[in-house]
Image (cartoon, rainbow, N blue to C red; front, side):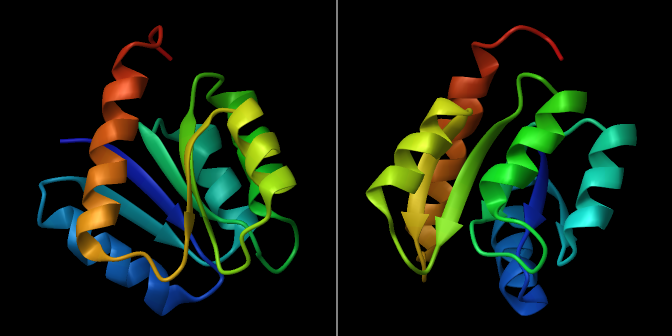
Length: 126
């Protein structure tokens, strides 16, 4: 069981991810506002962040960088409706372990989360 944060500007998309991952036994916190998600990570540890690249106030990469101030070893799965090779490279450079195009199907999501959590298990304690 992992603690996972999901941030998507479309709340229904985040709730769908939450339902899928809760069935796997994970505790999933869903946000549709960057500020709320950042405040949450200042006070709570999470094992993985699933972040949409296109948000209202900032992009997912900026959110990841801000979250890593509180959680330096946080890894993330970045989601996007508009794949961009340069943005993917930047995301990987900042700790993203996967960069997935939307819509992501259930099996692919579960697989990426399992891989990300295994990769994160090799990192030092936060």
